[in-house]
Length: 266
Ligand SMILES: Nc1nc2c(ncn2[C@@H]2O[C@H](COP(=O)(O)OP(=O)(O)O)[C@@H](O)[C@H]2O)c(=O)[nH]1
Ligand SMILES: [Mg+2]
Image (tube, rainbow, N blue to C red; front, top):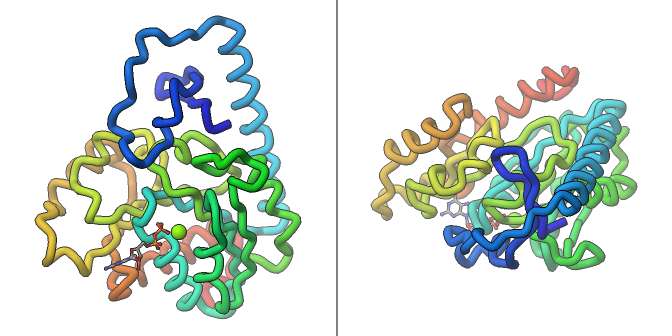
C-alpha cells in the first residue's frame, strides 16, 4: 500500500513516484499537475484504505479483548525510537509485561537491541513479503500478532518504519500514537510535515543531551509544534542521559490505567 496516500483533505491518491517515502528528500513533493485521479482510481484507493481501516479496527478489538494497550511509535530514521524503547524496557517495573512489534524495512538489528529485557519481540521486515514498504499498515501488524502471546502482555509498542510521511496515514490498530523527534532534525519540521505532527498525542523531543552542541532553537521548535498540534503533550527527553524519561514512563502508566490495567502501577 506504500504508493497510496490519504491526503489531508480526506482524498486518497497514489504515489507519483517512490520519492514520497524516500527519506532522502521528502520536502519536494514534485509536480502534481499531471495527476490522474479518475473516478475508478478513487474507488480503488477508497477500497484499499477501507480494508486497512477494517483490519485496524480488528487489531484494536484483539488488543482490547486481551487488555493490551498498543502504542504506535513513529519518527524519522534515527530519531531514537529504539534507544527510547531500550531504556523503557529496562526501566518499567516487572509487573508491566511488554511486547514490541519491531518494524523495519530490512534487518533484525533493532529487534536484537531490544532483546534480553524480558519483552516479547516480533520482527516485521517490510522487505519480506510486504514490498519493502516505508510504513507499517494494519495487515502487516495483524500478520505479526500470532507470534505474540497477547494474553500475557499489558503494553505493546509498535515501532514503525522510520519515515515522517507515510506511517501517519495508516491506522495500525494502536490506541495511542507517539512521535519521537530528535533535536538534530531542526526547528521547522512540524511546519513541513504537519500530517505526522498532527496525528500524534505525544511528542518525545529526544537527544536533549546534545542541546549544548547544537544551534537548535528549542522554543521556536515548540512554537512550531504548537502551531500545528496545540493539543499534543510534549516531553523533553534524552535516551542517552535518561533525562525526562520518568515522565514518559508516567504517561505510559496513565494510559495503561485508562485502558484498565491497574497492575501496571505496581
Ligand atoms: N546523543 C544521543 N544519541 C541518541 C539518543 N537517542 C538515540 N541516540 C542515537 O541516535 C542513533 C539512532 O537511534 P535509534 O534508536 O536507532 O533511532 P530509530 O531509528 O528512531 O530507532 C543511535 O546511534 C542512538 O544511539 C539521545 O538521546 N542522545
Ligand atoms: Mg529503530
